[in-house]
Length: 240
Image 1 (cartoon, rainbow, N blue to C red):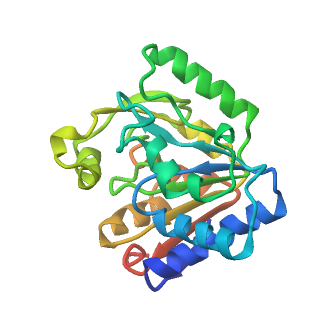
Image 2 (spheres, rainbow, N blue to C red):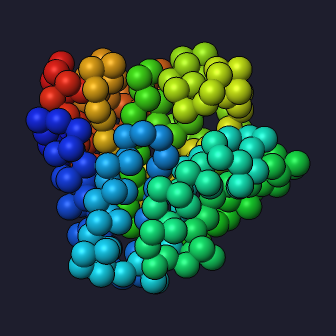
């Protein structure tokens, strides 16, 4: 695992952008695995600024997202589909038909997971972006998720619900379940870029990098990936 430590979140975002732009420029037909949450917002801002200033094209790029809340439609303001449109896609020249995410309102969970598994098999990712949960989760793969897991529906832990409550008007509004890409599929990406910012991620960063590879800390599996880059700001990396 390559580790880059930055002085703050702004530098973290800039470094992440350098990695992402290299992928897009070197392969205009690349498949990007993308993530939601507050951590990648700086990266997305740099991508938009670069597109506006330098015209880096996403016309042939395809994207797949890690996860989506169960029960939220793609037009719900707190859905991840909406998040991606508002914070990235509508600001680029990417085709909406080339952006993929789980269907949060699918009635048949098993069929939806099967659909997404098939999609991921057909679209190997050139890079997979990840955030890091304070309990070591990646995507919505909570502690003790099997490393061999494929797309599945997960009951979100109390810890994760609290982490995500800042994005909702009330914690009671946070969905209790989500569709998520499995750990097995995350590990199949050619390159993984994981970002960690702020002091509350310090323990998770330490356990991911130096801890035992265990399903109790899902992110620890990244020690086994041949091309993984961790970019952490000084606070998140304070225990390294």
